[in-house]
Length: 332
Image (cartoon, rainbow, N blue to C red; front, side, top):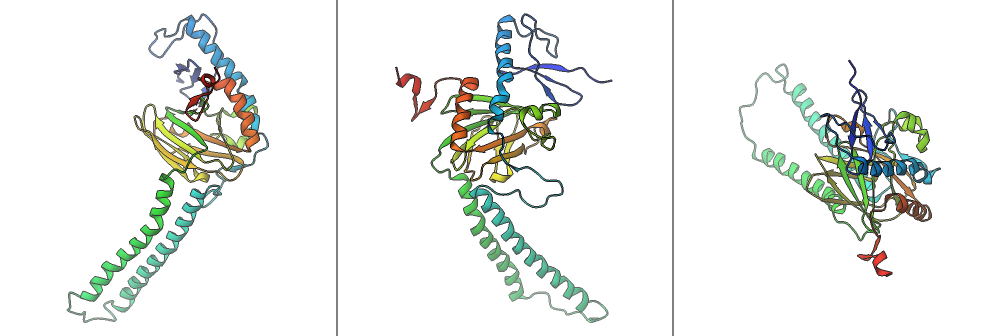
């Protein structure tokens, strides 16, 4: 027997239904003066909180204006049916990862071919028919040193290639923009600390895709809000979680960082090509783990400035900051 939808209330009093039969999120406008019935049957929100819920719902109604501010962007970071290999790399980090993977593939192919050749020699040259009298020796010092030293040299060589790539991911250059992302069950919360902006991103249903400027092929990938960054900007990404371990990943950026409750991890990226990029939570985090997509829109400086103006009206949590000074306070 199907289970009825259950009403959940987020920390911002934004009302969201999650249908336990299909796992999708709906966002109805609340009716003022009516209590909220939770899963335990207790009323949790009074009329004053309904006004907050109404404000959030009205903000959601204005959301498509902001989301579609970057219409016409090419979708680059989308998985393709039957695709093989990496997505098109658009950052230095992603190109380094693709190069390292290709180089390691050559090395492991050479090692595998060499080992298979040795096995073939042993099988066909030293079988019972061709070698009825086996040798009686048990040790060969030269051979034993060789099969110990050669793998060590190979590993040192691989380390000399991989460690610089790893250090580059962790050594964050001077950033043009800082974004903090918090993983929740099962959506993402984004903050622009310098601009005092904060918003949530939930996966879109099929019937919401066109409204937000996406196609049917973007189902399970698109969200109702997106991270927007200017092209060629160095973005410092701070990653944490509010409940269980998640992971923020955009393959085309070469970025994959665990989101751990109580810990703030950092990484960075610098997207060199305008477009829409998709990612997913990449750490098992519960029953709706597969419904935590990530959307990043890389736009021109002009489009980013226009988006920022609209975002300040919808998502502002306080005065924006420049050089660690509140702009509103500095102008008083």
